[in-house]
Every structure is written in structure tokens, then in C-alpha cells.
Image 1 (cartoon, rainbow, N blue to C red):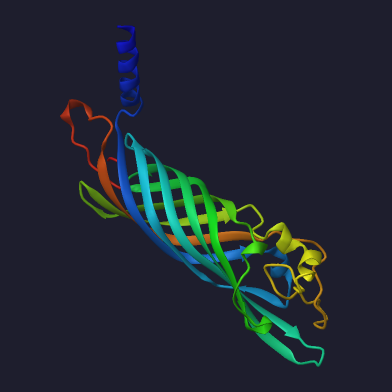
Image 2: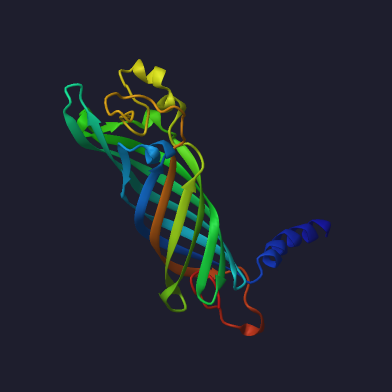
Length: 265
């Protein structure tokens, strides 16, 4: 009898915990802009960040508690890049304007909390980016999609904040649209990529992410006086198509469950 009580308790406990909890799955696709923020480059008159496009897509699932709250897990593949404009001068006095591009591909894993209200939502959470490949292209250095993964982190963690609203939907599916901001607090460049002495042994005369660092005279390539972290930023508009799977427990009084963006209204 005691064993039966224990077994029944373990069966019933999740039902009580997830009372009025609903599950959905979905597809996501988004696009926007990505940046490698470095204060030394922002302060350098010979260097500038350029607007760079980025996109992602993948799958998600949500556990929705009652009408307002949800925990969301997502796995998205992303393609991001940063273009830089820079000027440099050869010893002969010839001046050049050049473009450097760093591009990287991630598998991004999200853990998010959502709050729903009036067919709209706000979300906050974290994203762990597993870097798949990083390439650098720079005509001035004769770089043609060079693999520079060794000079960057193989993963980084970002804070995520966003929001959105219902676009269309019925009882079993919904289409949501929103905007997200991702900011990584960790330096994207690895210790090796920041170590000028170690890089010199590989005949590389610069540290990453930027190939040249000119002093203000415009005649020499000198390191900055102090190191500065390089933080990835990703801003996007994202679309989400959700499909309701079912509920952990039925609504009381025979009420009908309606799926709206993973929540019930």
C-alpha cells in the first residue's frame, strides 16, 4: 500500500505543478545587424565599423503556465559578420582605403522567460553561442576567407531582451513578430588573438579583430595603449510560427484551450 501511495504521488505531482500549463513548438526566422563593439576602434579616426547584416533560423518549444508566463527553449543557427573600413599609408606615402570583414556562424541555444499581456509579450533570458567557424577577408592583407577561429572564443554567453506581438492565428497555430537584442559581455577575441607577441611568431603583426592600428600621424602601425574587449551585439526582427501540442491538465469546468502565441487568452 505504501509503495502504491508513493507511485501515485509521483504521477500526480507533475499534474499539480503544471496545472493549466500548455506546450507548443515552433519555427523561427529572423534578420538584422551584427556588430563587434570595440571602444579602441570607435575612438580611432582611421578606423570605423560598417553596418553589417545577419540572420538566423531554427526551432523552439515553450512551456506556458496559465495565461501569462512561459519558459522557452530555442536552438537557432545564425550567420553574423562585421565589416570595418580603415585607412592606411605606406612608407612611400601612398594612401589606401580598405575593408576588412569578419564573419562567424553559431549554434545559438536560448533559455528565455516570457510574459504575455493583451496578445503581446516581453522576453528576457540568456543565449549560449557555440561558434562553428570564423573567417576573415581583407584584400589589403591578401586574406581570402581565412579561417581565424583560433584567435576567437569557441563559445560566448549573451544577455537577451526582446518583445513582440500576435500577427495572425487560430486555435492551433499562431504567427508572432518581434524584435530582439543580444549582447555578449565576454571578450569575443581569445587570449591568443590578443597576444601580439604570440601572433608575431606566426608573422601576424596585429591583434584581432582589426588588422591595422595606425597612430594619428598616419605613418606607423602601432598597438593601442590599452587593450579593449570586443563584444558581439546582435539586433534583429524575428518571426515565430507556433503550433500547439496540448496541455498538461485540462481547464476546469470543461473550458476550451486556445493557443495564442504559446499562451492562452
